[in-house]
Length: 396
Ligand code: PMP
Image 1 (cartoon, rainbow, N blue to C red):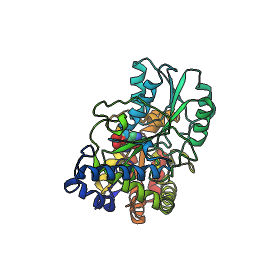
Image 2 (cartoon, rainbow, N blue to C red; image 1 turned 180 degrees about the vertical axis):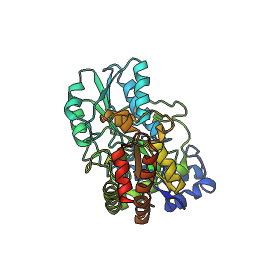
Image 3 (cartoon, rainbow, N blue to C red; image 1 turned 135 degrees about the horizontal axis):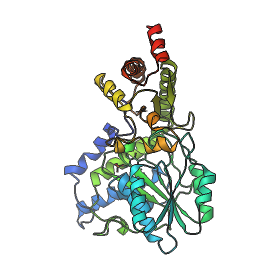
Image 4 (cartoon, helix red, strand yellow; image 1 turned 135 degrees about the vertical axis):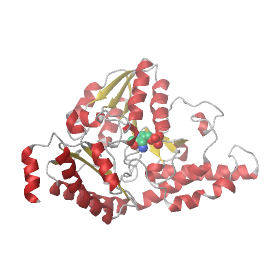
């Protein structure tokens, strides 16, 4: 069995979620659009599921939830949909320098469509600088989109403050909450965010389903046109088994979050301490405290993150260098560069993300294997300075 420490790339579907989904594949499989009794059953479960997902973010009304095929689509609907809807009001959008690649590419698309996009800078911990955000706002700003947390370095963003600022200026605020949804509660009645991207898999539900929360009164233009499902905001027959699974995942996650986040935080802190204390020239990327409870992102001088991942693979440990969605490019992470790291520093990263199935023994195993493997790679690296090699020889 491998030690799976890549929960930000994919999470296992919870068994309780799978059990809930099963009848909707071949027993209760009807289309909610059908007028017969089986169609009514499908409509009932669709609306019950919508209620459960609405509950997850404490939305006042279930109609605030639009089901989609996942986070990428929700980001498209939330950002492109809002931008197109408000085109007459203004053409300026603000995102951050460290958004998920789906948002960076949506921003590029909108620029081609004539919108002006500003990218707010982050500090060395990967946290948005509010004063810089405020300075970017102009009369034609129609939308701000900033994720709740960095999906790479785990830094938590000042979402309440950004939401307040946007509200004061009459600007829509969209947040991609995917990275934090399993571990940090969202309450739209406390923080009145306009648009929120949610994804089922990131809370231990099936992949290929997600949602866009849309505050009452906020409107977006649909980007998928068809039969008018989801109140016309997202056409296409609903993925009922997926939606049922997503809703169950939301219910379980909300219920278990307080204890689970605490448990993960303890494991994360043990891991961070274990790594930084045993490996010389190792660093934690992101903020030491304001970070996701299940995220530890390290940097080791003189070695390449990819080599380390392959070495860990040989020891049956699954971890990542950064965002899975950008892992096929050999470019250094845009997040780390935005935080002010040099290219060579950005290349030595290791992203460890814990999850519901992570046990203390998994963390212990990584702490046991990692120092030896970092040392091995450093001995092979032409970049390793002789005093560090000597230090390694001395402790042998
Ligand atoms: N946003 C964030 C923060 C993500 O981490 C991901 C990937 N898990 C996405 C969006 C895109 O999700 P998907 O590929 O499921 O559409």
